[in-house]
Image (tube, rainbow, N blue to C red; front, side):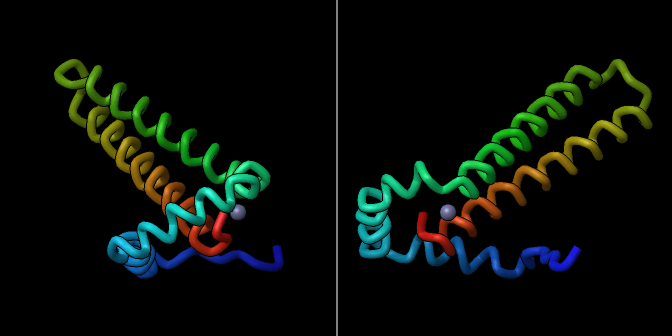
Length: 109
Ligand SMILES: [Zn+2]
């Protein structure tokens, strides 16, 4: 492995800020969506990140469903374990969403 970078979570607020930077920025990004329509389809990295995000999101929703099924019917330790799993799944889906947003922002795709 030559390169492995974890995106620091401290960069997250900047992305959010940039993406909501007033009506003009919103207008610009709306324009660029139209202009880049072809690129959106062609960007494989974006498609891959979007697939990862959807997979992580459905894993999270499954974990939450499982957790709710077990309420009141499982021993406390089992419930705690499932709670941990669903929390981890939520964090993963958030990270996947941020990776997708960051790619879109960096790549303008
Ligand atoms: Zn891209």
